[in-house]
Length: 425
Image 1 (cartoon, helix red, strand yellow):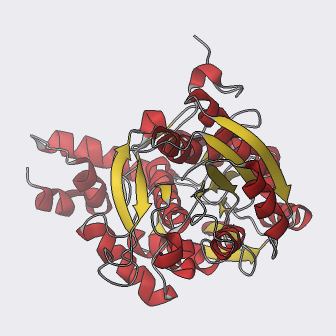
Image 2: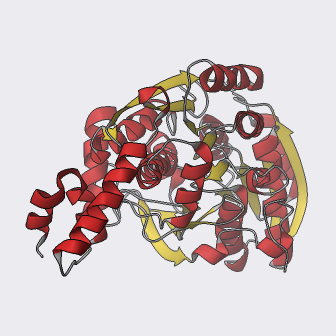
C-alpha cells in the first residue's frame, strides 16, 4: 500500500510511517502499525506542555564572539529547522550570560532546572562552570550538552549519564594541532596557558602530545582570564629559546597573545606560534597577515560543501559573522536532542538520553557521528591551516583544510577512561 493511502488510513501516523519508510503489504498491517503509533502518540508526555532549552553562554566576555549571541541564534535555527514543535508541543529557547563566574553559572542552572523547568542546557563555554553545571544536572536528573567547554573531565573523572560533550575537547585539539606541528619540526615548546580548568587541561594534553612525538616542553606559564598584557609571558617564552610557543587559551586571550607576539617580532626571530584552539572568528579579528600559516583543529568549517555554505550564510545574515565550530555544535546538539524527544515521545531525561545514544548524529555539519558510553560525541575533525592573504578569495575564506582526522583519533581511548559509565573489558 502506498504512503499516501496510509495517510488517509491513519492520519497523524503518516509522518512517522514516512520517516521509517515502512512498506506495508496489507490493511491488517496498516491497522496494527497505526494503532501502535497512535497509542504512542496518546501516551506522549511533555512536562509543562513545553520543551524548554536553555542556552547558558558568554554574551559579553572573552569568548562572546565564538559563543554568545551566535550560540543562541544557532539553537533557534535548529528549532526552526525542526519545525518549532515536537510531539505536538511548542519548543522554547531561553538564554543567560554566565559572565565566566562559576557561582553565577551554577545559580542560573539551578534556577532553570528547578524553577523554570528547563529540560536541557546547552553550550556552557568555560570548563569550570561546565563541571559545576554537570553536577547540578546530575542531581536534578536533567540533560546538559556542552559545545563551548573543553575539559576532558566532563567525560572522564566527572562524567554523568545526563551530560554530553558535543563538539571538541582539549584532547582532540591537542592531538590534532600539536602532533602536526611537532612532526613538521617544532620539537621544543614553551606553553602559555589560561589559569582555569580549561587552560590547565589543554596545557597538560599538549605537553603529553609533544612528549609522545619526541619533543620537549621547556616551560609553562599561566595567566588570568581576559588578560590584556601578555608582554612578560611572551618575554619568558622568547628567553626559553623554544621552537614553538603554544597558546593554550581561547577567545580574546588567544587574539591578544598572537597579536602581541607579532608586535614582539617572535616569528621574525625564528620562533613559531601555535594556537591550540583557534576559531574562524579569532582569525577574522586577527587578520590573515597576522594569523597566516597557523595550524588548528576544527570540528566544522562553513565552506566545506553546499549544505554548510547555505546554512552558514543564513547564520551570517542573523549575526554578521560565519559560525564558529562551537556555535555550529550548539545547532547540532539542539537538533539531535529534538529528534530524540520525538523518538522517545517524551522529554523525560532518561528516555531522551537513551534515544540520543541510540540514534546516529546527522546534521548540516555532521555525518554519522555517535555518542559514546561516556557521553563523548565521536566525530571526525579537520586539521586546517590559516591561509595567506594572497590565497584567500574573500571575506571569511580563511582555512585550508589539510586533512580529515578520523573520529577514533580525536577522543581519549576508553581503555584510559576513569568514567564510571564505561564498562572495562
